[in-house]
Length: 424
Image (cartoon, rainbow, N blue to C red; front, side, top):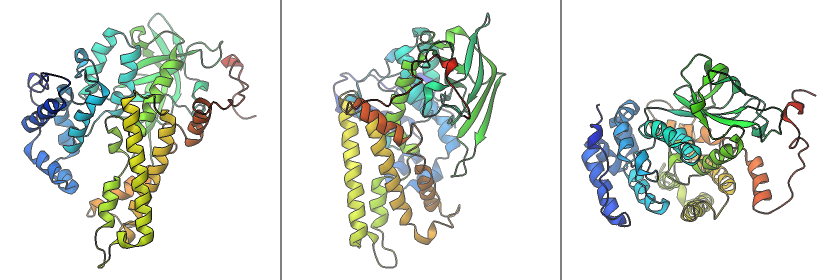
């Protein structure tokens, strides 16, 4: 399927950006004009099985650049970089309409993590060159932060970048890099000065993944898929024009990216989490309301109490996210929302999984609903680890929100090269 010509897919400027009803009408008109009718009809019906039948992943990826170029995927970006220049509150209108039309966001690492870092720390030339291909999914991104010896203590990373006449030569290993097997670019943290304390000698780079010296090996997950990867860097080259921010100033950039990662994984923002979190609370209620052998699970008092508790949790999370967005992320620390969201989602997916009964162990291709529920349940097991463990985030909440004393880290002021590593 061919995407419409680039000049045809830009969302028309609303006459008044403050006119949210006008914006909503413009979005619906764009969807009616550009989304294949069979997709739109299936999305409107609420029948996910039908949507999966008429809209294959390959067809959606082929069509997706039209959505990216419209500005709808990135409504808060400046217009000169392909966005709509909307504030967060107004952007909710866009996200609501995209969710209603089941137009999910692709390139989630690029949209949610790399782009905010570029917009805050990148040069105009970097933004002009790199942001449009992120929006239309023609340049997929990954995140190259964690390492085998630097996960929860990310500042202890040991991947080195050494400046040469050609640029920066990078050597080391990264781990748990989602979509690195598909990525054209990666936002990379590397140590450029081992003689200073670990937080001070880190620099951020925008790495070309498709070059000699970059080897990607998939890691098989409990779900059977391999979106996680380990990445080996052996003399990979980064031009200095692809350095993000100043030399040695990578840690504040890392913290910005991690903040956006927590926000993405907690469900705040544009609904990116919908692709990876499993079935929704509405799905739980719908499944529990189906008669099974003449009985409805929701009529059981214990089951009904569990569903009510989950519904309340979900509502609290949704309203907390909305409040945080309205206050530009200052109402509640993203670490707290990440803890709440990941643990709630595990309970939610477990409850949905329980409703499958004997369909769960033998899920197969001819029972697509069961297969999706099982995958959602299995994926949720990693929610409290990915994007920072709940234990680390509880430390963040204790220190930043409750003003409790920090744990005494003995190596925080030592030169990185003097920190003992490996077995003791």
